[in-house]
Image (tube, rainbow, N blue to C red; front, side):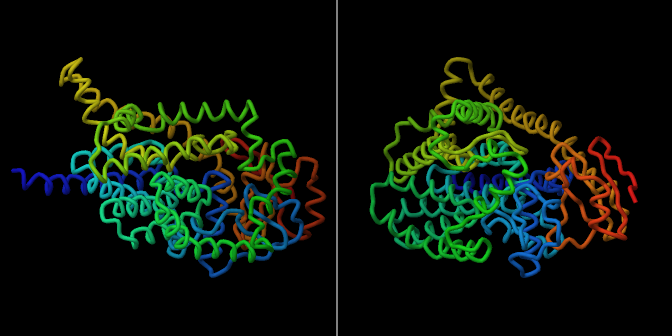
Length: 475
């Protein structure tokens, strides 16, 4: 029996990985409707369509002031404001008409790799705990079912985490090269996540553990600088700054806050937002009890190498991401407010796996084994219930965001639709080539006659936001 247990556990783990992957696909296909809901998601999807055609950007038509769109840079050319990594991966699916399937695959890859890493460090049963704690965390499920860049970022960071795990076991330099390459790839998706992961490597107090990954990451950083030069005119001009004038034109100067700024340290609003994020992350977006188990795992008395090293590294990762959140803007938006803490889910899974047994032992000692088992089952059920609660709120909003394109589906290509909505720049999506119905995010003061004069001879409609949207012929 002792020889069969690891094999049986592996089969169970593989079955869970397949099940969780199926959940991500189901949520993406049926609940989120394979539709890039937020402006962030659409911006990445638009760039993926460009990459799928072998292009970095595409020319734009006249009247740019009526074509403004959230998180999309539009001047002489149209392109996303975000780094290229996430869109490049989405482009693989876009070439085959299934861009929505890319993030579920990335999510499934991530949980498999984290399970393998934790298994090497802590053993088979704790690895199952890590698999469930990560794979069923509501935040992770949403990351893996949407178009947000957090799923690919986590996939690359999972590779880096696996490389660190291997290095703590073997101390071979090539593992650090793998770590650096994975960090570099993550830099092409979410530069801040990659940077914070690299900072956490300082906990090893080894110059080699910092210098080798840094050198291995340089080609990826150079590729990003080249990309910025091609897209925004300078290696040191990123898309956020290129989009800033448009953002100010849409939402006003007061709303245009830099994503990273020391000023956020002195903003009462941002501190409230940070507290809100931490509270939601601990209580709503992770499986109930995960954070408590992780606290047990962080203080567990275990000086066995390499588990002790990985425990310290995981604590450092959590600390770095949580501390640096203080200089990040955290205003509520279209997505889960906690998604910027998504990288914390990986080290949290290892710590929770390390602390699960002592936590269960403590509960059994006070309340008995039956209560302990019931609490574990309830933790999983409550996590799924929280996911369902979020989707119950999100799905009607999803339908509303899609509604514009449903009521205009049968219009002839070249038709003009003026989008009348509270925030028209969230709806007026034309794709990168402007080759279908043309949606205008014209401000309210723009009259139908002005638009008619700008587009003579073309059918003109006005769409009004609502559930359902309404469409009227204006010419």
